[in-house]
Image (cartoon, rainbow, N blue to C red):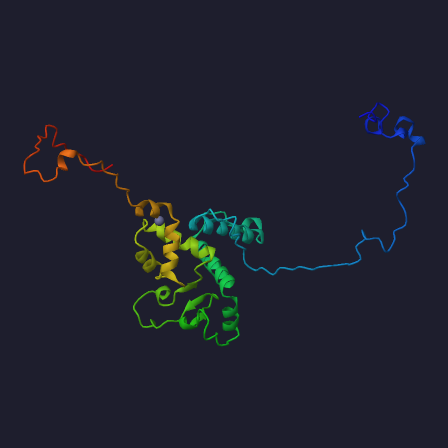
Length: 268
Ligand SMILES: [Zn+2]
């Protein structure tokens, strides 16, 4: 502490600061760069990145809290904006979203999810190659339709049902788009049974591990959890000693119910 008087450098600063700027020392730290200096990086690296996205990218984490309808609507408006940017001002669409725009956006989302989930299978189908025998899709006989969507070939070509039900779209159970679609149907059907939801989904989609996926989604649905919860029965009190008499003759203890019966309304 004796060194910390008012002349100390820590308190008064360097001595040259008390003189005019002409008397300040010149920068003496600049010196030629030595090649063996350990601070100098000798490795040089250059990189190049390029993207070739032709369809809107779905930022799954940012849209995590959006529902299916909101998600499709947002992407549809973005597609509308991009399309309008390429048109003259007088040709631009300013109406509400049309049904075809929403349908196209849904197909874009599904095409994107299929591309994310089954890139090798889609490349093989485009190249007219056979799929791997032990692959996840080989048993479904998949094919790419005219919109480049992956569909189940199946054996229902003669069935009197819609074309979507005959050749449903293949979805991966873990993809975000699948989660949105399953949750949408779950809520649309008022959180009914999982098999009913799966049956409705199969009118249009073929989700791998379908029932397990529906069960997983319904387990995180607040409404489903509220409906499925079991009430906890209250713990009953101990029996009175008058009912616990040992080796007593009948009608030793008697009682009269002065209070009841009481009508109880069971419900909320
Ligand atoms: Zn639900």
